[in-house]
Length: 200
Ligand SMILES: NC(=O)c1ccc[n+]([C@@H]2O[C@H](COP(=O)([O-])OP(=O)(O)OC[C@H]3O[C@@H](n4cnc5c(N)ncnc54)[C@H](OP(=O)(O)O)[C@@H]3O)[C@@H](O)[C@H]2O)c1
Image 1 (cartoon, rainbow, N blue to C red):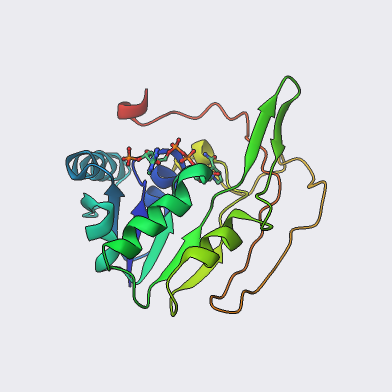
Image 2 (spheres, rainbow, N blue to C red):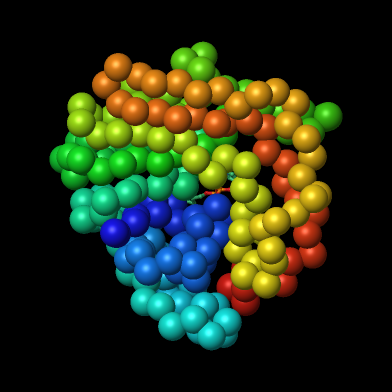
């Protein structure tokens, strides 16, 4: 299977790329608005993986090209820009039967910290599903993962340091696209991760 990580140059994209590369045999392509940036970041990931004894090749390309050949497309993009990106992919006619996966969590910050702030449609995942072309499935996933811990291959993801969720995650199904939204509040961890060299 071929996975495209759009916005894979960013925090959660980095973590997902490294974990998918380390733990699976799936083909991986890093997507970006800037193809050269995607290629450079893919090479950074390869170097970090090699330092951990993992020999993997990752591709890099612009978001549309990355999505075109993929079976699964992860939208590792800030919530406010996910829908725009899906519309750009639709306009580029590169979406047909892929599964779109949205880790996006609507959040807002104030003096008390970050708070869950979903769009009026219910969740960012549902917002994406409303904009995806017919035949393209949409799922929500990875919302509760902490990017820095995910991207530290020396860290275990089994942690007791997560805070308890304050509400049950929601699940929903749209008429045109399958969704499985679990956007609940996520709690950044306070790990002392050894960051890859390019993020030091
Ligand atoms: N960080 C976490 O711990 C975490 C955990 C769970 C879920 N999430 C969710 O994952 C998503 C990404 O979070 P993140 O922390 O990885 O974000 P981020 O690092 O701030 O951004 C990710 C990537 O998004 C792309 N991007 C930025 N502005 C854009 C725009 N206007 N249009 C299209 N692409 C744009 C950039 O890639 P290019 O410049 O290369 O195009 C950037 O590298 C968010 O929706 C967040 O809610 C994050």
